Image (cartoon, rainbow, N blue to C red; front, top):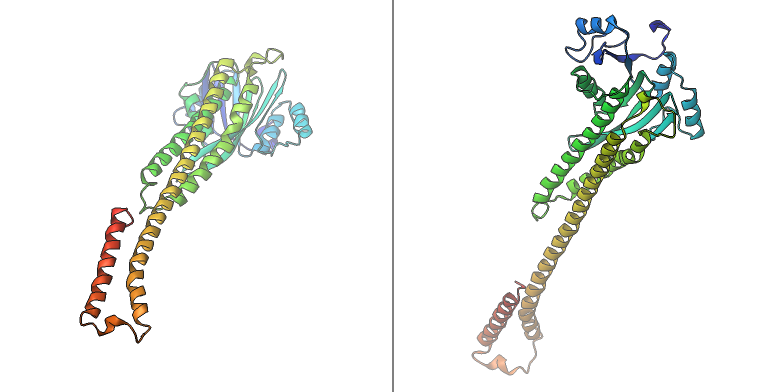
Length: 348
């Protein structure tokens, strides 16, 4: 099938020749995005021998199976399984579909952290023995990073397209780890100002909890789906589709550790929220005690003035020379005594 007959546009093609990966750019003839590896010399080297594997990058995850089918891939079993589970190619639900001896279909979530926000996406992969098709949405940039590593000969060992597949999974977890570290730094910075009563950290605290929840929702399926990519000895999977069990165990452990760290950050934010609300409550109680103390002090002259304001005729002190000054001195003395008592008990 020629390029003109392909209805799905391939944005990038990377070939493996003599255990070296060469970025050939797109089928439309655009230059490679990776410097050096996509030069004319690299392309000539890739064309001098028959490629051992090819990696095709398309724009939309829904087009991955179409692109594979147009290039001779057998996708009928994958389509049938997706149809039975109500997960079409356009679904973002994480899953792994292994077709015994010739194909592997993977959908995994991605995450990136920018401007205090977690943005999620997905990575769709379809692998055969010698071909890998991928599409990425979101801002994680896994495709670009893996292409650079392959061009710099920093790839995993393995037959066919397996090193590219393994590199993408490793880069996926590395990006998730970066997200967790960035969120951890944001939580640590917030912790420094959370207990300053002049600051109001509650909006930032809530936003961080929301971003952590989004990151956990995106990354939690990784620890569930990764083991399904392992070397299942009960199947007849070819060597080029067998991901190293130890590598997958490390990746699964890494994914679980990331989730545990995110959970720890979330708990710390919850603790900060509880302590913050407790501090606010204590401060309100202190204010109420001060208000109550001053109200009690003000009640004394109010009571005395209210009694004398009744204008009774028979009040002996009305005829006393020192009656008025005596009442004033008594009111001031009682108020000072109450003030001293309240200060002694910590109310003022």
